[in-house]
Length: 388
Ligand SMILES: *Cc1c(COP(=O)(O)O)cnc(C)c1O
Image (cartoon, rainbow, N blue to C red; front, side):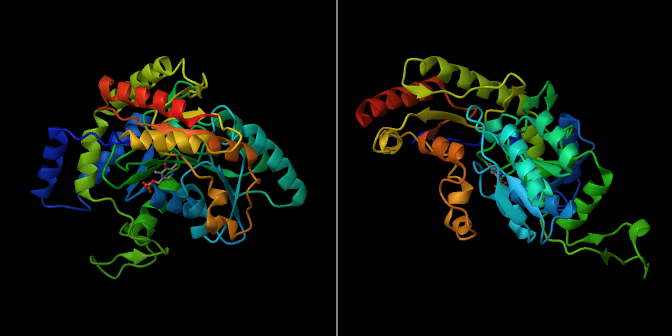
């Protein structure tokens, strides 16, 4: 089976992890701040807080921005469930903004309309979470303009987008947001096995997220309300154990050295797919000129037939031929958990149309041209069999 995504691990990665295993600190040692500095430096962010997943990063980002009961968080329906769940963790309500039909990202136009309606209804969101789907940045300048007009905060879910750029600058520099979150799950651009990071230019937000990642505890005497003695630490917030280990940080640091190479390789694979798929009846990914995608995913659309079975048949034909295709994503509002909160199919029609037709083809840096040729041949056959 050719997988849809896969990590790339070198001997240097193995050596970096083994070195930590033989060192004094398996966790809470020097590798974590080194990894944070490497990512922050690459992105041009002043602060980075490494955690054990992007899900944890989204959670502490929401808490740092004071999201709580009675508040509202909006995100895209076409994302992994974590982009929305972070709002529910904080006791807030979640709603969605429909997507752009070309980039599949949260639509800035739909956001503007929904904000105008929400203002009239007297219930504006506190946080908007744009998700850079497939690694392509959302229209952050437009979303940022709207945040000034309507007073919401912005968390970029850049789980797909480390190594990508927007208007010539790295995603993660938070020029148009309060906080940017990355994921280091093995299918993503670089990996720490499990892991994530929250980047910000705001020192106070970074300090709160650092505390929230480790039980809400501070060891900084300057921040304490009293000082019992040299052993003393103080819990000031209700935090969690969301820490990344030094083993993981060492892997991430080693992977960071190849980030640009990985993204460049993903662009080569995407360009070759574009060329090889030109004569097949599929829609290839459209790239907005403002962005340089990290190309976490290469999503094609297969036009649905009258019976709404065509995408499923193509998907099954590919899987039967050993091609590990996937679908990103089942619209979050159609998940049973969200339907029970009151969402119904039809709420976000552009997202639902996209979902009916999307297939993610395999895409990972070590993919060979022969692998890619097998994917394209199998797709041609599966499309031929699928009928209309
Ligand atoms: C992978 C992913 C997450 C969650 O990442 P974890 O590190 O697995 O917690 C969140 N949002 C999006 C868009 C993702 O793709």
